[in-house]
Length: 171
Image (cartoon, rainbow, N blue to C red; front, side):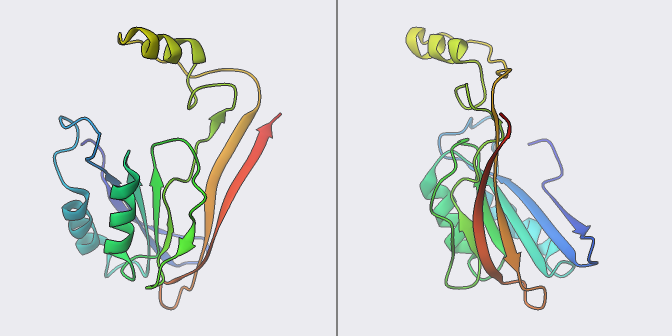
């Protein structure tokens, strides 16, 4: 898939942070996802692992089970596994036994008066007719920002806490 997939960045405090973006395979378009996220993360860790004591993994995937499996697979090897894609923040944030912060989905940033950020009419029509529809980003109304904040011990890269965040920024 297009993009770099991983990189190492320097935080303001001078600590190097590895960021790895993966795409799941279950229920996703097979033409877009050729590589298993499990194989892809091994390649990315080989690139970022020695350079960055803190590593954050974003798994853009549909299936909860695939996200959980990757979280456990990487438990103790990365600082956090944060699921994305379903646009609905889950309430399963936790620190896994090996010190990896985990959440199935960090949630959506976008308009609340929508269907996962898109205009309601187009999405409803697609479900009702089964015909493809062009989705447009909904406009107006309250905008919610969702995400997580993860505290990490910079000495060992282990997560100390994870907190869900949601705030309406445009009422």
